[in-house]
Length: 126
Image (cartoon, rainbow, N blue to C red):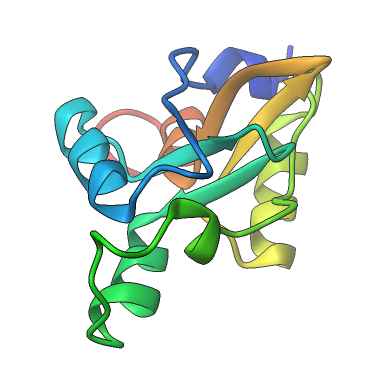
């Protein structure tokens, strides 16, 4: 039986409000050791370390003066719990993304490229 998104996703989803400061997002990522946060209440937005690096740090902006809503990726790509790992990998490849929320009614989890690799590469290497 082929693995599905729901089998490999991280079930604990860390969220942040779109009105929160970028500095708060940085602290939340650090506290939970995650690389991205799902943004609420704007549907399914996402803010990643890359957003912070490219849109804040590289432009020398102040993370205490920008909100998450200012830099987040709006309308991020979502997955369904029943999507096969192969479909997830294809979505990541085609969209050039590294993670996406798994949604069925509401957010069920998050799948990352690392989750796909763990599910497809045998332990100990290829």
